[in-house]
Image: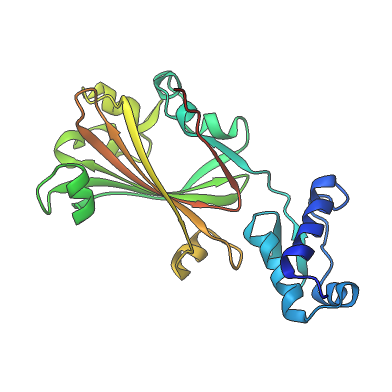
Amino acid sequence: MAETAREIADELRERIRSGELAPGARLPGEPALVKKHGVAKETARRALMLLVSEGLAVRRKGSGTYVREFQPIRRVANQRLSSETWGAGRSIWSADIGQRPMAVTELRVHEAPAPDDVARILDLEEGAPVVIRDRLFAVEGEPVQAAISYLPADLVRGSAIEQEDTGPGGTYARLAELGAKPVRFVEELRSRMPSQEETERLHLAEGTPVVEIYRTALTEDGKPVEVNRMLLDAGVYVLEYRITG
């Protein structure tokens, strides 16, 4: 009985995890897999794409499929959102990547009417103005996350939140200075396939899904002060949540 794409991918995955196929190594191509496993070319292609969608491999047009060299980012939500991080003047990204090089690109800050769903979450009137911070995060030169933050304009207008560089501790530190310190966060996650525009912006490999996260920041009295819509490359993230009972 011919092997399935999943079985071929399992074998290749084990070779990657054992170190037999090191980061940057070229994986067997479709013709080699067809010959070795006695399967159709489409089955071989699906096996390789499974590894790409899992973030273990990348396809290079005209060259082949290679073991991914980029090390996954472990996103520990409880840790990164602690006031001990941004309250000390550090970026919340420092909790995820340590000393790995990080850059914010395609940053655009502007004021506009709130989208209907954002207005509802922020408890604003329909069409109320919000300050929008739209940016792309890259780690080691690789785009890994797009994020759009929405904040009530009447709250943050005239503050450093409207500047490209919000200063030490970022947006949450500035909100605290405005008397709207975030103390509680709610995140809603879902996994989906990206649009063509999202695929191009994040430089996603074919077949790679994204994780979409909507985070709401709330003050001690329960007032929502920010909605952040994040789009993560599912192939480079490990999401960790520490829950105590």
